[in-house]
Image 1 (cartoon, helix red, strand yellow):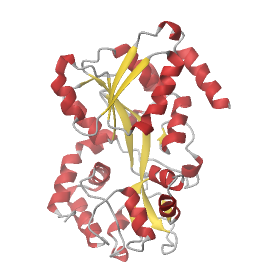
Image 2 (cartoon, rainbow, N blue to C red):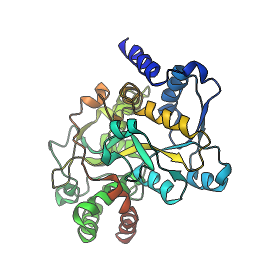
Image 3 (tube, one colour):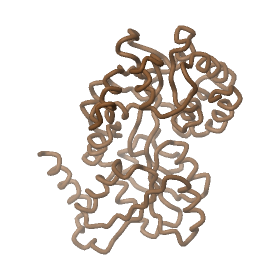
Image 4 (cartoon, rainbow, N blue to C red):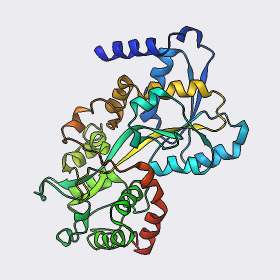
Length: 337
């Protein structure tokens, strides 16, 4: 009962003129599933009176905004994955976000160096392991290539953005040659051809096809709290380990984030919405609804029970810089074949 009151107090402070904002609006293009972003947008409209128009775009968001040019109605572009956010910048369809509030709330390594995008939540690339067959309590990403796991690793496509980001981080840590060798080692350990999604890793662990596999943290919350019995069975079949690279700096994380459109017709309102989404009270909604790690605040109890996340401090900009080479290495090693 305390959270809505705290949120209301925050909104009243941040938006004292909400009553006069009835005609204001913000236009969002997003690739996020509606259920993972709409509750926060609805809360914003409820507290401020500002209308939020959302267009959910599965593919081709950057191309659409670029084609619309100066007449684009887009104010904000909300997406997952550092690579996708970086693509918006490279497409020339963003502009710097000037906000002292975001500079204060969002850690520097989770924002674009030139302020073209800002993170909203974190998702950790953890390792799912079989509760029944794996007794290890610690693992590194490098260990995925250890021959002890031969025939026991499941993973989605190496070309998926989540794995491209992991491989790009590996390049930043170890360089191109060592990363290629690592990919060869992981490929040699695969139990099946890379395919499916992160939830399929848990499904195949339950099915005895494999014992371990990299996957995102929030899927554990989605599976264990699902209405579907099969999802809950997959989620309960695994333990979750928080790997680090061999430097022990922390677990690799990716983000969901937002960029301000170059031709945003409602620029000021768009920045206010971003500031709202980064506020601790609203960040808690992300944790409760999506099982993602908020930038500030507590995670959902299901995720908290997994253990303590120590995010790798490697710059997301550095990871984005290595994405093309990461994709090239996936092709060169025939990882998905």
